[in-house]
Image (tube, rainbow, N blue to C red):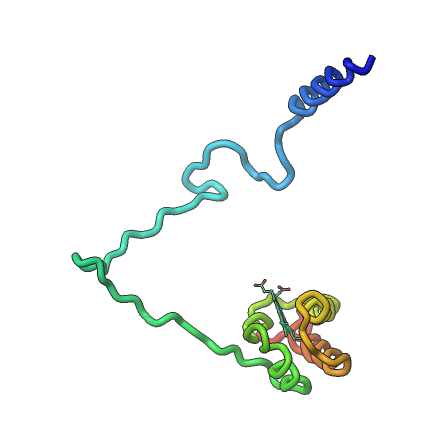
Length: 138
Ligand code: HEC
């Protein structure tokens, strides 16, 4: 009896493979043509290249994000820029209040940010007061 189990497994495998092979998340299988999703364009040829292969590039556009003014801003500047810049905050789309709360907790619990509870509360309130869909100013 036991040796028929593998046959059962093979049959099951064949059945699984015979099912619709479209995977969740895969939008389009097959070849990609112009204008189709997921197309990777070739980069434009470099036009200012010199014969010696040396060419200039402009300065990398650095920008220092201005955090919204309000109570708690100094705490954010002090505690949240230890590991990364405040761009991590300003580059987010407007996030719901609960997400900001979770975000601050993630920084503390997952990434080990050393932020006292009281400061974390004020930072969360600051983020919720300026960076949610309801409160974010353009
Ligand atoms: C101990 C270091 C540390 C501190 C302090 C810190 N973060 Fe982060 N933060 C990280 C790391 C690590 C990531 C993930 C970086 C990556 O994925 O490239 C991150 C990512 C983020 C992101 C991007 C979204 C995400 O979840 O990856 C946001 C927003 C953010 N931090 C906000 C904050 C805020 C607000 C504070 C202050 C309360 C803070 N961070 C303090 C380490 C820190």
